[in-house]
Amino acid sequence: MRLLMAPTPNGWKVSIMIEELRGLGHPLPDLAVEFVNIMKGEQFGADFMKVSPNQKIPALEDEGFCLMESCAILEYLGEKFPSTLLPLQREPKFEVLQWVYWQAANVGPVFGNKLSYTRYMDDVDAAAKAHPMERFAKEAQRLMSVLSRRLDGRDFVCGNEFTIADIALYPWVRGWKWSKIPIVGIPNIEAWVDRVRTRPGVDRGLAYGIPREEIDQWSEARKNRTAAGGSVIAANANLERGSTDRNSDT
Ligand SMILES: N[C@@H](CCC(=O)N[C@@H](CS)C(=O)NCC(=O)O)C(=O)O
Image 1 (spheres, rainbow, N blue to C red):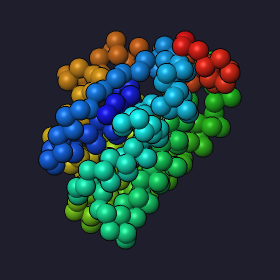
Image 2: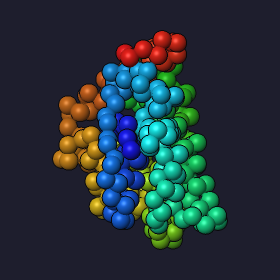
Image 3: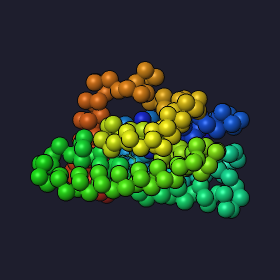
């Protein structure tokens, strides 16, 4: 099995899943992790696109079967290696999956866009940014209210058990300082972020592609590198680069 990833929120969903599965008795001895340099445009290379036609990380290859989309990968691994991370009976399973899909359709895109306008869209002037910034900030706050209400009286998104719903949400929510989406003053979310962070599998998963001492606090050099690389990825030129028919190894 090959995991193609980069140290980003969507990449860490899968590395956390791998490490949680290992903690639950699935050692995955044949897993190879390959880092894709999305700042250099490796996501547009022909080899990568065979596994991930959408030109984004993460992607998984399992004995010739290729899979893109982080949440589909969580579901695939959850089914293949049964554990408490994804119940397999219909109702409890769909109770989890609705929150996984909610993340994929809402929190991921909205936090991603808010982050891009806050940190990366440096080729756009402030006046042009103002409306989308306000829109994504307000929608992110609304989504956090939804999550807060859901966590009321629950340790994790689906009750007392940590599941792939928590895995899908956590890497985005924990990055709130970088995306400037405040969760301080939302006690249910602050407590959930702290609770999830204490898990050994989460700790190991967050260390993929980043020095251990920078898991919780990036160095200034990493912030600058990420801001510069993120600006390249967020620029419209990146989309043009991805929409050529060349499929070349850039
Ligand atoms: N919905 C996708 C989103 C994947 C995604 O946006 N990946 C980013 C990194 S977090 C990426 O590969 N960006 C490169 C690019 O946009 O060119 C998923 O959940 O897997």
